[in-house]
Image (cartoon, rainbow, N blue to C red; front, side):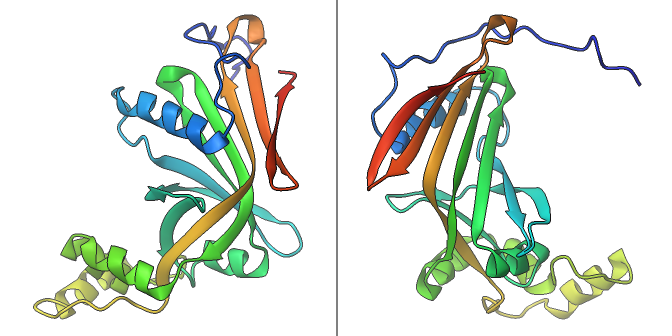
Length: 207
């Protein structure tokens, strides 16, 4: 398969120092509102990249569930591969790519577990089938078959779900943001925000 000539010319928008917000969270919220106004199905889908203590990386899609003054929140199984990697090495990166807007955001920082009561509140706000799914799934572990999951689901029928201790939330506390806007001739706009002495330093990066 030869993809040497497979390319798209980006020309929908631009990103300049004259129009960006001085705080990266504010810039994120403007772009996130823009993407919510499109037909993109999972605007809150993001790639989460983690690594082991010795630097072996892995990445997967997770769903952003909240943005607050602390950072970016998602939920998962603490005993999963990602959970084990986070325990070994809490440094991580999240990545949003919104093709319809020709935009990308990279955010680097440190992952911290959310308080138990916060994970409880979100867990019990989910549809009951999602609650059962979190109970049944021993995420990333080897299982014998699909039927194994279905049997576990039947065994839970008519029971009251309880949040597993192995399931809960993380917040990524940012130290770096990079906003990318596709531009013609591959001369893309890249604006970064780096946290330096508790203040955000804004810089333009070469494409």
